[in-house]
Picture 1 (spheres, one colour):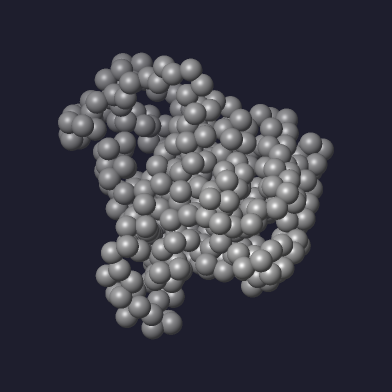
Picture 2 (cartoon, one colour):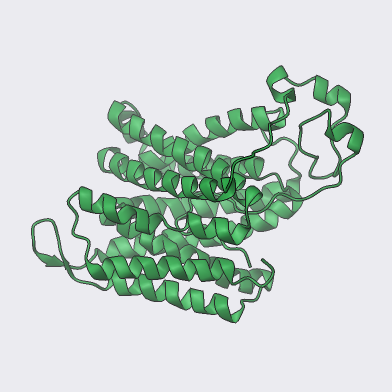
Length: 362
């Protein structure tokens, strides 16, 4: 059973479907097949697109390109978590969430215009919209609302370690909602991941001032809420992508739904004045833009490239190393990183690897 990588924000790791394509059209038109019809656009449809959208992409001929793309994804998500933590401390996690989703909507519209010839997912069937909107509301409006607050309370390192629980949570939700089953190796990975995270969050360690302290209970609960929201959201997105298998456009639907969800939260809490004030904070806006570029734009793109060019289990395992990448960065920032924290992070990542690689179906 393929699992989403640890610490994933608004990402899909579903391999794109293989659809039969007419030989005469596949050489002349670069567009992906219609998800509902399973056929390529006609020559006339292709000719009506912008010139840049008619160019066929060159084949990737780089040794270990998929593995490199997966490592690049992990780096992107590391940068994203640090950027959003910094921005959240300046203007608040709610404002950062809505701003980065608005940035993501625009970036994904441009990406879809290049890849698909149209900026918006107007070709998605109603059934796909239903499940993907639900996925976006749960994954973004609830899950990321909790996660970004955890960034402020716990910091990026501890929050992203707890987000390593997304794969085992997704596995359990998949068992309940989709009837999926785990192999013995996957069960071992689930236990190892949960054990590694639990071992770290229970540790009392010296803080920056040298006093012994435990991680914030509220921060831990918020990070767990973020992991649960993403796990449930990913399962609903999987259901929606059965009807609409274009991952970039499906992700755009989720982002649009999340943006609307956050707008409703701002309205209910009367937080629009704070949003306007936060939007005028140039430093925070720059940090949020960096996070949006490296997250739903570059991160998602590289993750999809990775699962296209190498085995999904290998790609997902390499993408799950974010908690380990954050350890040396935490030391550079003056945080106290104990041996227990290091071993626990490694155990959690190894558990994720077993979840991904233990799938008997590959």
